Length: 124
Image (cartoon, rainbow, N blue to C red; front, side, top):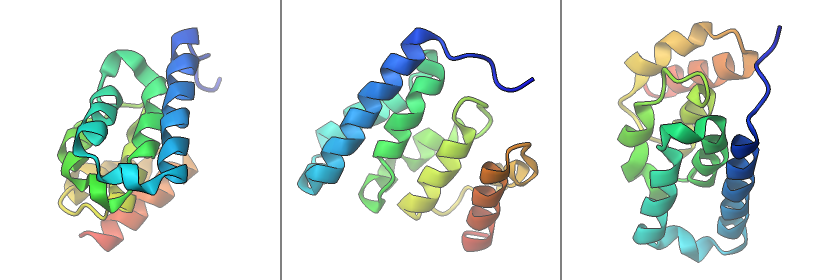
């Protein structure tokens, strides 16, 4: 009834992204390295990784990565990462996507509904 089982490669990708996120937490200065952020964003937008991209999006949940907001917003209709995209846009303080976030206010998943409502209220 719930979401389908994850493929093994999704788990592996997710773990790698979580490692990257932890490195950014432990070493915040790395968040200023544009080439590093660009590579993480490249992985986060690789549709073939499916749900494994979630942790890479989580790794870029800070204002300094806002330049990638448009690239991430393309995935607001992707069930594998839509909620993570909304939350990432919120944390980036990236305005301009309310019209694309608005449909998620009716998501089946409560946490996504909450984040979408927050976004639409904060960035109308």
